[in-house]
Length: 222
Image (cartoon, rainbow, N blue to C red):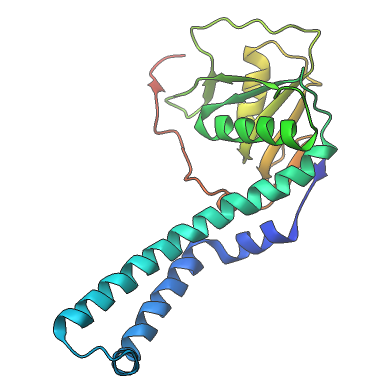
């Protein structure tokens, strides 16, 4: 398995959303503690002026938290832009993914590949629907028939590989060869299922979008 493990992503993983919220809370407490000094230095004396200052400060704080999410998007994009050169991908490659997270990952990879590898057009995308049965087993493309040109290279893409079941199910449902290459933005170290290429090995909290989970369609019978 070829892993990127960029320092910037390891830093994002170490900070995490919890510490970011803690930092924001500490900022609020600190601002309240020195509030009187700030008002005095800024020449703010009236009640309405102080209220306006607090409102503006609150807006800036919320914007700061939003900025941390944007920074995570940017760092992820930068790392992927460098790592994509290590993946055998061309404009004729078909990127296959499943679920919301996989669709985001495949879309990012397609766009980054076109820009970084100077391709005439981005690689094609195939996103198949994912569902879960009562035992939380993942099922892909249920009720649909998709035929892939076997002469074209295929890369199975996932946002996060925790068990590897989704990648294996995609291969099975699309009748792809077992040797089909796989890529993940994040690969959990405890996962026994390996992938060919992983941008990061660790926790999924480097991803700037929430976990989709299995809250979508649930199938009673397979």
